[in-house]
Length: 442
Image (tube, rainbow, N blue to C red; front, side, top):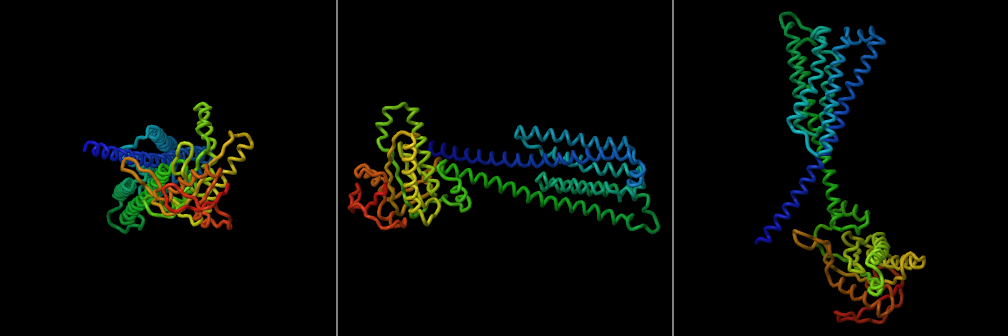
């Protein structure tokens, strides 16, 4: 019971670690998005300040006409410069959070939204000192609310977007109430001076926040899907190790194959390096490992090129599988081609002096097998189980008896589409009653 409990705790811990990693990834993506938003908001008032100062210096009369009154350069400069400075400080805070991996608190995010949305409110209040209050409500600063609502989507938070739209709507409605308080008496009002007109504009601001919230939710969903896809890719790579070609990994992710055990027709390859024991006796462990790495690199490359996977290493050899985890109608042909490629590459490397003289023994047999994950909740391994594995292993040992480098069974030969050739006399295989007809390819 203690063992089972500790195993369950370990699994739970692994799941918690996976969730934590996912949350860290999502937090980082949100902070990167927030950094872009703050950068834009710092650039807008900064550029506006530069343009305003340049225009009021060179063309003061034209600016006064365009802005419906004389602008106080000091107050406008303080407003724009102060906001740009605020966003630059916020940008530094985001950068610190990115480096530390922490998330900005919800309270700080909402306070920040309140401060930012208040910028156009302050601009409108300033305009009310330059022109009439009603005219101030009709000038361009009102549209700045929409800029903040639009950029709030980069926070990837539906409620934050809703809050931004709500604050904009409330602040604008309060400004309208104050501005129209003096013109609410008797008499006919102009349509643009009616409270109903401005309340509709406030409602549009709120609805814009709602719409921005749905966009933010969709963007967040896209980020989550992307992160989950990356996690799925990592899961597949971890499951099949480093012995699967990139093309096979992509195919596995697209088809979501290999997760469950199933019965499938496969071709199993066993590879063994001949006389390895005597070779290793005369060399240092470092030299032996270097030799194995260079030889295995050639072999694995050939297996990957022909849509196979190296399932497990067996000391000085390995077992490879063709036709799983992905279905492949040419699995036997690909297996034969891979075996011939291994022999050819090794002979070429030996001839060029890049590796020590080397001979291999390769065997191929095809048949039904159970393929998929086998193991416990603590550890699972993708494996192949069945008589086809035993037969391929036994056939490989016959290379020593025949002095050959590659033997394939009759079933593999026929399925590979090779031309008719002479087979060996039926040979007995340890553990099987019926002898096998084999084809020597190298």
